Amino acid sequence: MARADTRQSILEIAEHLFAERGFGSVPLREIARAAGVHVGSVTYHFGDKLGLLEAIYTTHTRPMNARRLELIGEAMRISDDDQRLMAVLRAYVLPAFISSYGEAGGGARFTRMRAVLSAEGNPEAREIIAQAFDTTTCAFIDAIEGCLPGADRTAIVWRSQFLLGSLYYTLINPERITRLSDGATDGGDHERAIEELVATSFANFKAIAVIDAARREGVATPATDRDDGRGTPGLRPHPATRKRP
Amino acid sequence: MARADTRQSILEIAEHLFAERGFGSVPLREIARAAGVHVGSVTYHFGDKLGLLEAIYTTHTRPMNARRLELIGEAMRISDDDQRLMAVLRAYVLPAFISSYGEAGGGARFTRMRAVLSAEGNPEAREIIAQAFDTTTCAFIDAIEGCLPGADRTAIVWRSQFLLGSLYYTLINPERITRLSDGATDGGDHERAIEELVATSFANFKAIAVIDAARREGVATPATDRDDGRGTPGLRPHPATRKRP
DNA sequence: ACGCAATTTGAACAGTCGTGCAAGTTCAAT
DNA sequence: ATTGAACTTGCACGACTGTTCAAATTGCGT
Image: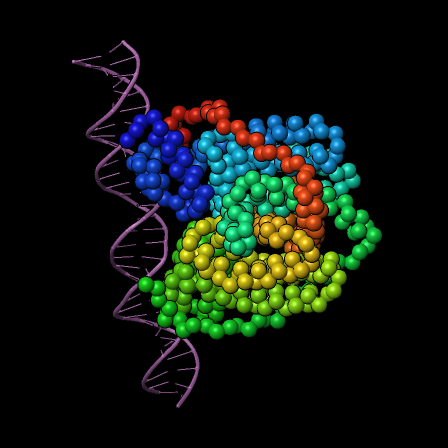
């Protein structure tokens, strides 16, 4: 096979597959086969399966974080609170979709990979994924807090979680949007996704002040009721009768 | 081992493990061991590994959907648009956390399992997970649309996606909330999560009208700029020098 | 107490997994 | 043309995967 680009093609293929099916569910042999490369070459270049993941991670995380810091730097120069908040949110969302590294769509794929792996719960993979991530997130929470004088910080944290969750799930399951809108919108449309995410989270964070004020005035929140009466057990098929072709 | 409750304990343990590590990454033997049961008993009762997943699913989905329809029915009797929207959102979020079936926390665990499996991308598992889910979701989108006269339906779909994503990610990665708030908030606090999710998504959906109006007035949205100049490749460690203990 | 069906057990199967390693190949510098 | 390092290949190891199946065991209705 071609010499110099085996490493690169392994990286790209692996990222593709990891982003679609997770870390544990993708065999090294499948990565090798898809890349047109021998299994041994993978372990030769990356040592481990985790080493391969680490390599994917480090190629993306540096330019992505650089982009984030650059954009947030620009945003912080805006004096108007609302406009700065908007710019800060864009600085958070945009690099997740559009990377400065590699081909178009690479940023979104890498972010999707992180989303999938964070759900998988593999502790070793999770450690790699979490690296140097919270620091930038903290910077963003601080920046958001600066745009919302008087807002409760924990409320901001909750909403930042919701923003990330929205972003992740949109990348993981874009078909759902297409399906639920009867094809009126394409869930895979990154430009639209960015726009919606920024607009949504802007409304989110701006609403904190209102909610806080309402809570201070003592607006009752209905207690979450609980019903522990065992539900109907439902019909159960006969054991071992169920067979698959 | 105990007779009648093997099936039940297998179900519970399996749900636990699937919710934490996904479907493909949890071996049947581990489920059996954790349940104090022989591997053969699992296949005896559920035929397949997929059959086991299917059984977990059917035990929860019926009471959960029943609860949802019940709550949405109550909500629809509210005449005030805002209050009805609030109730509809609560009807969507609450059953995801608090199930009427099984022990406390079962609903949240099952929802987390769905979140994790939807990220895993296993097509067979995904099919089981998606069953009879969109129908209730459609009902909710319709209900929300009824509370927001004149709002764009695709915008509602996008925001319903964000709501589900927020919900899922909060269940998948609650530690992040605890960590980012320096322990000021517990991400695993379901009551708080419900409250935040409902308040957030309420603000979300209410903001659609405002955004639509702004868009109609032709407020410019900054174009998403793209930078395709290859980033710095970064330092690469020597191949095959990296070893793990 | 007995029989019979439901259930559990032990063992094996055919694959696949990540990983290690010696032998082979390629390529650039000399 | 030869050397040496970078890289690829083939192959095998041990562990683990889901699934199957006959034999052993259990427990309930009679």
